[in-house]
Length: 114
Image: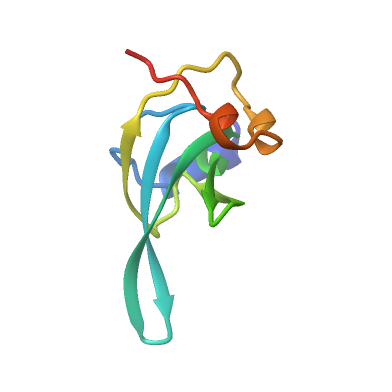
């Protein structure tokens, strides 16, 4: 292993996050700091990709808010993420489902795995 990979592995905490993949519907609870105050906010949507590995791994979530698509990228190892809940396990044939960006309404649904 590379020295930088070894140091990055030591610095990141091993967290017990559930395993999820593209197509899953998840809720991410994360901390927002506003001045001196802190509060927890959640972002619920479909995972459209997981990218990277190790300390630099990220995932992108997409949701529709008031008929406008909103995407947010979260680092897996972020200390601001409190917990991740899996709502539905989706069944898709691709690892990156960017084709959802052009679809609206019922066409944008993801099949649920039984």
